[in-house]
Image 1: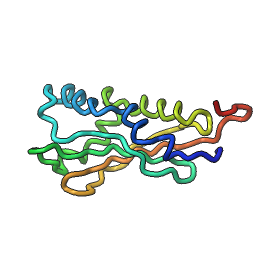
Image 2: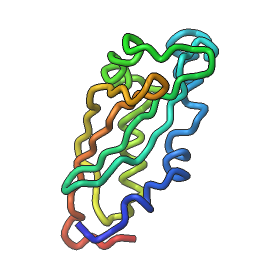
Image 3: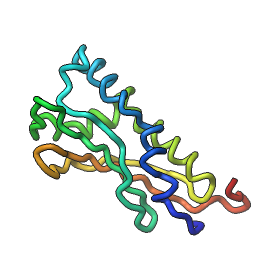
Image 4: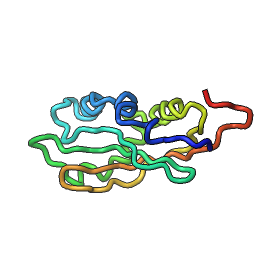
Length: 139
């Protein structure tokens, strides 16, 4: 893989473009019928690029006056993996585009929910990275 600074490519600004704040409300609207019923906001963050794997994370931040209980978040990896509003496959395609040929995204998987604090839980998104195909130059 070409030497690139993945953290710069996947900046907070870029990730908020890929996964805008409004997506949490869209998710709760689809899931619960009302965005106001959602207990947390969802954002996408960069964690690390280690070897042939990229780790992003869905950050679930408790909304004021709501409870971010473990029983609300522990089943989410399975829900997120197939929910069309979250669209993990689409996120991976957009990350692949941002890598601009320096590497390409392969398979992805969601890890188990991690409780960071009572106000923040995260769901890791692991994306396998592959070297660019021979003869393909970065744009």
